[in-house]
Length: 208
Image 1: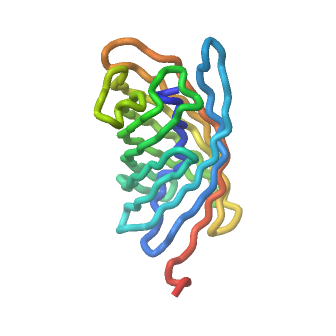
Image 2: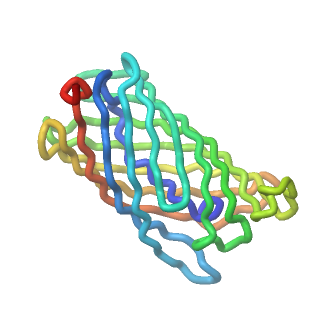
């Protein structure tokens, strides 16, 4: 996996969360990575939240057992059937369990382009293309000692399908991959993810 085998799953569609609405979700992903000379698979539960911040954009993040990512999502184009958005993000993670290298400390900055195709009132297909830059280092990096650290770039892609169970409830399946490359030269094994997300929305005005 890209540094430290952090899940590349975003589990997002292109449609932004409306102003005055809070979105909450839970995901169970499986991440595939290289462990030694063999492929390994690990379940990775996540919590998601997003909040509508303005016309055409929102902010939010995802929380895992060992890390946090925050970001925004900005609608670029929209039609009755299509939505195109851009979602930059930043995350800090400690991921020693799946690390095939000695780099449990991970800092990632990246962005994802998302394209929704609304097949019907209930079904939506989402394609994503991402590019992530990462710093991956040993625990000594927290003390300012960076021997054994690396800078990486990881292009990736994803495909998801969402089904609207109710107007405020959605289930989404997503799969994707990343190809991590060290900026100093060399390519690491490709990694992938697949998972399910249950997401619901609530009007903030109802809480008052």
